[in-house]
Length: 361
Image (tube, rainbow, N blue to C red; front, top):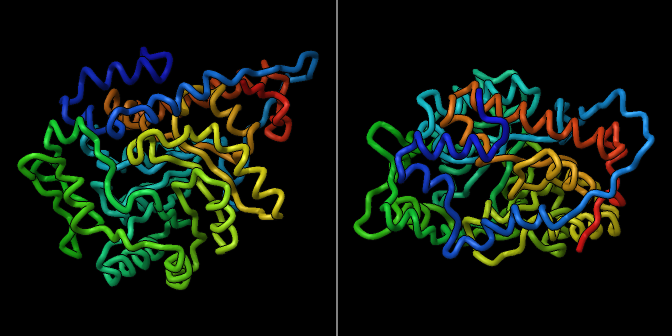
């Protein structure tokens, strides 16, 4: 493909997608301050590279939740991939497998979990929203485990949907023929059309459970043997509480700037969360999403305490630009950029990516 970076792929996607679809993928909450800050915060960090280090061989392979991956970058959970390409989440999971990494499938996928796992050549994790109908939620958890998913990722920052004004203006809903496929058997597959709001916001307000609380972590763990990851934490005390609850992983995330606007950029809070977990002796896998657009962003996140990062919107831009090949191109671009950044920073292995490489303002 002609695009040489993620930004160019986004420009291609913007030209090809209907406006309401591009806006749905790209938008953040209210003034979109956090959306912009997620990326801007990376740009304020500088890299104090080492010299005269033998970097003739580099190795970026690692493991997350004990599962081997070829690079410290996973595909983040994002909704409705068939808005970008006809193959939808099947294209995404094939691209992830080709890159040797894991995909986290959204509850709000357009493709049933069983079909996605069947097409996978790498690990598939499942991102979970908890519905008011706890019996339906329990059934979904058991389905994803039976399908072969390797972890459960509980999103905790969306008791209601953030106000995404572009979606309100466009009165976002799914087009005919697309649905929340994983919830169709429970009767919760349709995103409604409403007169003056986002249909997805109405879906959340009606069906998802705003009473979700810490007590429910134990409930979820009782339902499955899958490792549980909590996604949506930006505070050290919440991270400690999650670790105390026995989770296997934590995603430092503000939902891509789509929930509470003016929440902090994830890279800014990552070090304090990593330090708090280390100080208290917690050994959980710490992940980060939000604003990762370059290989240097990945390197900075690893240096500040992340085991790996999640990438969401760039994969959607790749899908819109070229389907499976486009998503694969995104992952290859980021892999190549990380490889070069490691070489130029004097860090031939992930263990060499230490905090002293990063200078913070």
